[in-house]
Image (cartoon, rainbow, N blue to C red; front, side, top):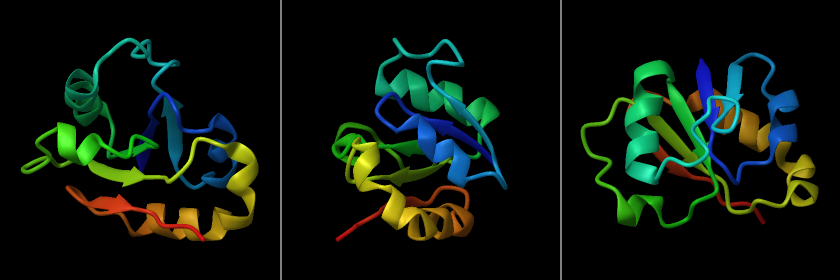
Length: 105
């Protein structure tokens, strides 16, 4: 699966998703795109978007998109390593058009 990390998604998470091709918005030169523009661009090249933007679903119309979106509850990398198996499973389970908000204890 080709995955795009949004601006706030911790880059070290890439190391836990080795079964997938991962790029960041910054690497793609998309760090200045607003959410709607980012979603349109991402959908042309990627299967999934991982974001930490908790309000994305309220700010954008996500219906009819083929891009799967996984929302993480934090931008803090130190809080995520103990949850890597759960995050990796959530990514593996994504299907086109899914919107999943991952809840971590």
